Amino acid sequence: MNPFAPRIEISLSQIRENTQILSDLYLEKGISLMGVTKAVLGEPSIAKAMIEGGVQLIADSRIENILKMKNAGISIPFVLLRTPLSQAESIVENVDISLNTEIETIKRLSHHAKTQNKTHQVIIMVELGDLREGVMLCDLSQFIRETLSLPNIKIIGIGCNLACYGGIKPDDKNMRELSEQVDLLENEFQIDLEIISGGNSANYEWFKSSQNVGRVNNLRLGESILLGCETVGRKAIPGLHRSAFQLVAEVIESKKKPSLPSGEICQDAFGNVSSFLDRGIRKRAIIALGRQDVPVSSLKSIDPLRMIGSSSDHIILDGESHNLEVGDEVRFSLDYGGLLAVMTSPFVMKQFTDCNSQKAI
Image (cartoon, rainbow, N blue to C red; front, side, top):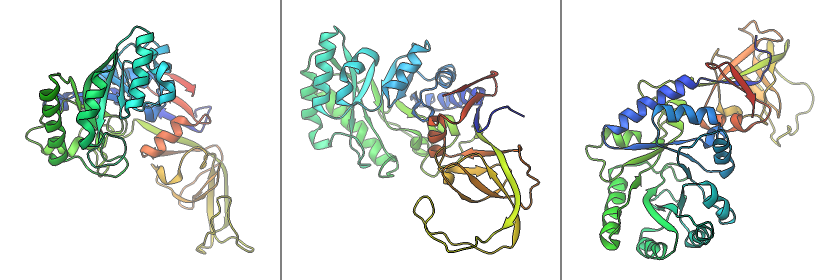
């Protein structure tokens, strides 16, 4: 038995193979990939697996994660997905490309790029319906004009984001709109836009059904590489591994108990008033894992086991049909939200199963 739980077991070979399959697939229509590491807290070993699998850029939303990867010796170009005004100086110093939607932020980047005698590259994000980040199409031409006037700033691309906030799926209509905007901007300003980043892991179905991807030549992939699925309906992508990440927790109590609490029911620790079904005396197991580590709704028992409830640091399982004893381990698969939480938790050991290394992040 592994000496430490809870832990997340990570297969770098599966991540590498997923990246290679997706890189080859998208390249069939001329689309390159950014590997997105924000869900894994910029873990350098995972970034390296993505690079070995064929991504040409590493993208993250937090500069701290990028610094971690750079300090680990990763020298591939980095893209910052979220650009706070307050971090402009550090962004210019440490990041090759940033995604932007506010002219004031680009002015600040320009100032620091001039001070540091650098040219900072930007991708301008446009709004195509999802209502997260993006310049409105009616403002795009003026936005580009102002950006082009700034010293030490180079526009290298246009991008959009879909299916993250509003859940708007990428389709032929919004992807064609993106391509048309690229053509208009290049003609109006006599510029060449190198990167046309059409979206993320949600673009898989559009890609597979589209006969013509237009000007789109880049996607930013995280979940499909890490968890092997697209993100419109969370369907498995054929040929990809779905088990690169497995969460393991230890059984710390195993007893027969009533299924119905006794006494007056009030609010639980999270302000909820629960109702219970009397199923008689049943074997119950408690594992050393809770809401502080991961959203319980993000867990799917591999065994399988039914989760009865949870608190901040305990999850209660129905063990009636399972001979669970203290010290046994229970395995779970994770959705994207669960992966994000577990990789961020300082209480979950990160173990790489195919390189014999483990670390607490």
